[in-house]
Length: 306
Image (cartoon, rainbow, N blue to C red; front, side):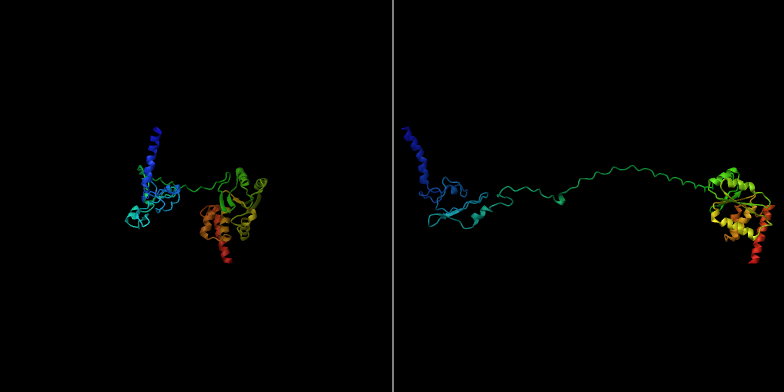
């Protein structure tokens, strides 16, 4: 008895399903479509799948989802027909909403930030600088006086007459050594007639210097003597040359004045200025006055010859 009741309870649902028939057309002779059709989600939910007579669209390709197609009233053959395009189909809207892709995962690409969205960080205000008082201007350094030429020890009245040519008084022993150390090659002694120059020659030659001598006086001042002095001074083989004379320097000073006027082609004023630093005395007394008078007489005689 229990077995019969159990079989009866199991058959009731199957009979109800058989009486229900197709969910669309109501045909009880319809049977469910193949599994491939039943798996397509294209119709609204119903207890039974549609029959073969119902127009079933082809299943969409994998990865896509199409909206269900609405059906109208059954046609002459008893099958439901799709509704023509109208408000009902348009209500479904597009298959894929804008911005939605159902074809698979889409790699995310970060949006490029807009120029307007870039906001520069606010600049921190620079702290105010303490104002310092202006530095007082330093006083200009006083101009240094020009350096005087270094005078050798042991040579009085030493002065430069020309490049590599100097003049002065008779050197002492320290002056002799200084001339040797400085590389002088020749010395010229301008002395009065009758003076002995043997001692001076010996001292200079012991130190490797060439000794030359020239006797000069106001009475013996001739053109030949002046030319001889000019040649010794102008000869480059004698340089560096040192010219010295007696203590007052009047004899050598007079010859230097005539050298500047004749060989140097200088005017009277410039020749006097340069010869005064080398021993010339225009307003002196005694031998100095006699030498200056002889120089003036020499120039007057040369003017008469020209």
